[in-house]
Image (cartoon, rainbow, N blue to C red; front, top):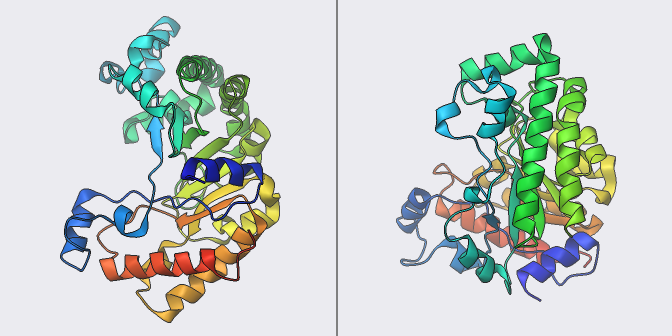
Amino acid sequence: MNERQRFLALFRGDAVDRPPLLEEGVREEVIEAWHAQGLPAGKTHLEVFGLTPHEIVGPDITFSEEYAGRIMSLSDREYGRAFCASRQRFAEDWPETVKWLENRSHIACIWAYRGMFQALGVGAWPTLRQALRALVKEPALVSARMEMYGEFCAAMLTMAMQDVIPDFIYLSEPISDNRSPLVSPGMYREFAVPALGRIIAAARAHGCGNILVSTYGNSAALLPLLLDAGVNMLWISEAAEAPELDYRNIRQKFGPRLGLIGGIPMSVLRSGPSGQMGERLRGVVCPLLQSGRYIPLAGGRVREDIPWPSYRAYREALAEAISGSCVSL
């Protein structure tokens, strides 16, 4: 059973020999530092632990730089040009990518949505102020923008899925700080959920039922709305540790219908290669593995503050938890 087969079976709720061994995404400068700390020369953490990156493919669904800073002031026609569905949004090597993915054994997804704030042109504080003001003062304009953005994303996803059936659809929603979303659940329901519904409907119409949302910060208040829209997988990254973001609590609240990736607090990795690391890690991942539809992974990017001995101890403890008696596979 290869990693793609494991992924698809796991999130169907089928028995697997083990969950896929995904990786967090480690920058080159971190790997260089690890080589000085004991990582064997010429090797990466991927090779040492047999990890598999997931591949994100598909078209560019961002607006071009010429529209930066003025998305909310565009006319409808101009907004339509900023987010124009076109084959030109695919890279020149897209045909080669399609061929490469035909008989893949690894996990691949299509990035189909970059978030409500992307649709409203947010790139820095001035544009964030513009978007937040429009949400309060010009709700009709925001509704029109989100409707057009949802149609654009659904059209681009349809084009991509005519060539590639992904293992999951990747929806990114960077809309929160470490306390809460920057918009109310009511606003999110009104403005974002209809756009997500169009995108998710396009994914399912073309044969992909795994719909993952990646959130950052504390988006717990939006989770019921995301599930109502059709999301059935969650990956929380770069968030502060809080009870409402603890995957064990999320699993208790929503059950295994919401598949989970991640969930291991970064403080576990930062605790160093000690017995406490293994005990804390098992306390998080064992109940989640037993309840199914879960891939254990650190809950954020691994950075320079985590030395190689700590990362190695984390991976060894995780492998032991996966293969040990705490797992019912």
